Length: 132
Image (tube, rainbow, N blue to C red):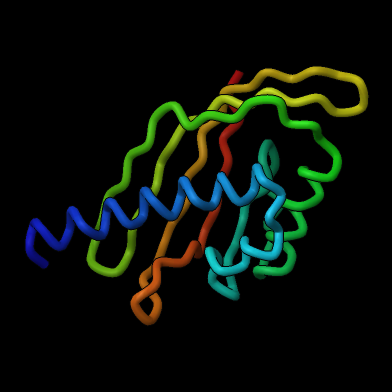
């Protein structure tokens, strides 16, 4: 792969991450499945619990949106590394939200592993690392 092609793929994955977060924040649940591989695996934040399959992962995203009133969300750092048909997106974000009359202000890290499937990058693994 040429350096130019690599940069193009990295920019594409960065764009996908930003669009995923925008769709999630806008409560566009019907748009989220396009980002995930059918057999995606997610490690639930703060646990060793594995959530497997696109339907279960989407349910996790949507339950949070239903339960929380998000007041601010911002990706603060985003790095993408590319190895052939696999891309690793590593980013930190700050989120402010309210749930059950409690306000939260968190800085966390997320790792998304993408695989190129039929000319589309899809998430095959998601891990969240809780921060402050």
